[in-house]
Image 1 (cartoon, rainbow, N blue to C red):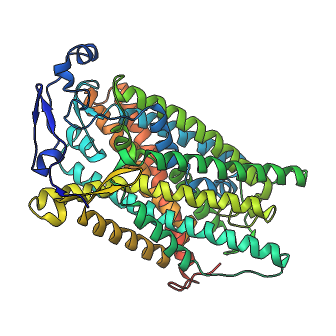
Image 2 (image 1 turned 90 degrees about the vertical axis):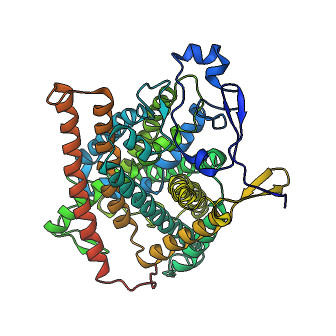
Image 3 (image 1 turned 180 degrees about the vertical axis):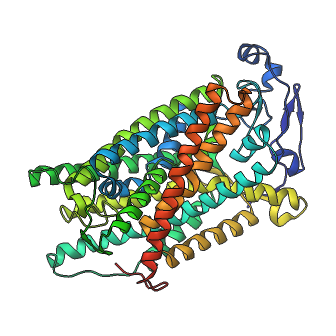
Length: 513
């Protein structure tokens, strides 16, 4: 171990190196002198501070269109894609694809509004907002900052729980597919999910020690590749089953009343709840706005960060929507009303078992990375707040340099080790307590979609652009916001109804499949 270093990266101010030994200076968002234009920032080295530092005194950001796209795709194409066939089955051939397309359009539009709020005031030279909460603070302020933080971090916490459930189900699916293959389908191959959740939790304890977003790009790229792998397998199996059946299953209005499912016969009331829950599942599949600002903070400039981010968002949303449409629609075409809640683990497919194993391994690898992409903003918030609260506590602020062969030097921090480990243990325990994949996905999607994807981006954009009340543009934005609020409420009601139904036959920590 090298000698302890408590000196955070130096700042370069007006050409002179200024050492900062107090962590509060590094963590504060400080206003910086503004360059008059992008051209001046390039020509005048004083306005750019240094080749090694950005205009806010932090180390040069190195993110590009491709790294931002990989982060977004990792965040978007998650376990949500696996529930889309089930969602389409609840809504039918007309409403299902239409709702997916509308969610994509709204997510793309509001994400572009949010991208313009990365810098306060001028989108090129304004003060940077490092997090979603910083953006809300600089544009809206007041109690909305606290409300935003509460919703965002609860949503991140819930997403971590959902990913733990999804990963454990995929790990079990690997073992069950091999069991089915050996027994010829005669053995029901029941097993508990607890051990698999603990295994996933242990892996996340290790990966959660990655310091921040700037160090997680490689994991996002691997995870993005994995997401395409299992989405492609699910799509291919769906196409193959449709071709094998010789017919396209499903109906225009979705699952029929009277259909017998694992939860019982579908009644008119259940049909309504399931349709609402499907809205939450689709909303969850498109939720990435809660980490958009943090992703944008990794992008280098010039060109202006919001320009690169808009291109990355457009590319990512188009790619994911195509995958979503294909996976959801072909899954429904293959199974109709019997579409499983998780396309690759619901055992609508049994063969080829080795291809299912590859797909589920890809899901697990992807979720390991996606867990980190979603949790990094929450990790950073708690660590920043703690450092500001107790700046002289070595346990919280002291960094120890540990050389790692072939990887350079790792900055070890005791507080980071303890707090992130406790966080992973908490999400794992809750996942073991409430392992309802579809219901949890629906609740998370409903809870986070309207406020984080629609309301705050719309309100910040109105404030930043000073759009007059009752102008045509203001009215249009409010209509979008109110409509999405109604959808989120409906999705939440349907998902909670699903949890209530599951709890009737559930025993804590004794879940088996």
